Image (cartoon, rainbow, N blue to C red; front, side, top):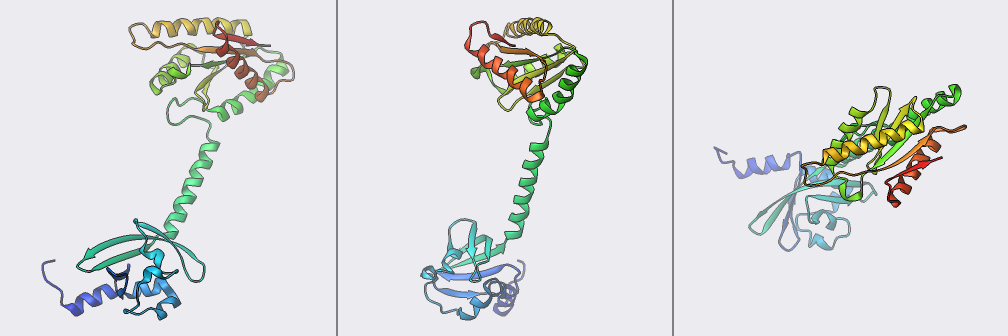
Length: 271
């Protein structure tokens, strides 16, 4: 500051500071506190004096001296508060400023809960592939299964998984572009939380889906040419059956994928 404050001016300024201020000496004794700190303590402040002995042994006040920049404090009336703390050490005295951030943290937690709820309701993977997520797959698949059963039209699913050692962000994005390129506009492509790809193929028989598997395998082979790391995949294939629903059909395709992971052919058909 350009002009020094007088002692009275400095005292008045600190006393009316909107942040709660507590001055504590090296022995834990209170050297002083301002109006905001008294308001924070409420009725407890009437029992507090500048000559109060070591508050580190006071059950109610000791938490206010906790380490870190955020302390959890239970007020005498049982109200739980979160206080952001800033400390300034001076000769023999430490000034501790407190800001009540309880409401701010509550709003942050509510915001985080809302974001998690929105994620649960989301139909797409927003972070990596932008493909349908599992929920999006099921929501999209249900009417297609109903249509297939009603009109006896073919509908197939390919569940495609990369080996664990190849599940990397770059590989997932690369394969997601390949699947978009090799499927028709009416087909749907998704990616589960376990990084398995799901292809929903309308008006496609199981035999036609197997031909697409061979085609995708060939493309993966060509993609790895000149690359230091190979891309391979396993496939589970199934077709819509009588009385199927989306959950059953998808589960059957995923079970076939797990079977394919365990055999040498790299693909399995669920019937």
